[in-house]
Image (cartoon, rainbow, N blue to C red; front, side):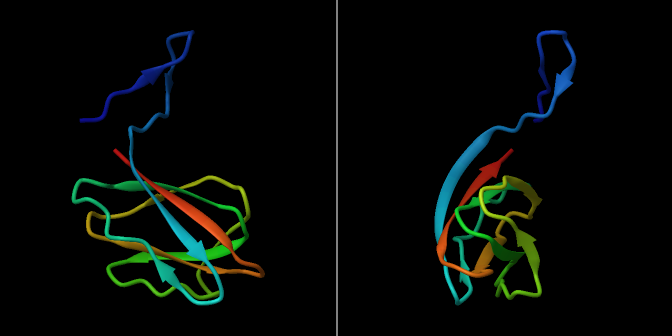
Length: 101
């Protein structure tokens, strides 16, 4: 069940419950996360390096997929059982994926 969070003025703000966090090495070859929990509908992603990513049951990221700049947080819609794959844009790094409810 979704519950709204409120700021000090009583206005609703976006807030998601954090779940499991995974770490994926980002390099020259596509690397995918583990499958997300059945109830997961969104993930929060961030990477130490600029990279490209894609989501699916068996994703293979290429430089033709969505671009994620280094150190930028992005929320991505997913389905339970999906995985997310990353490939570097220029240099290697680490990506973190946090499941959200």
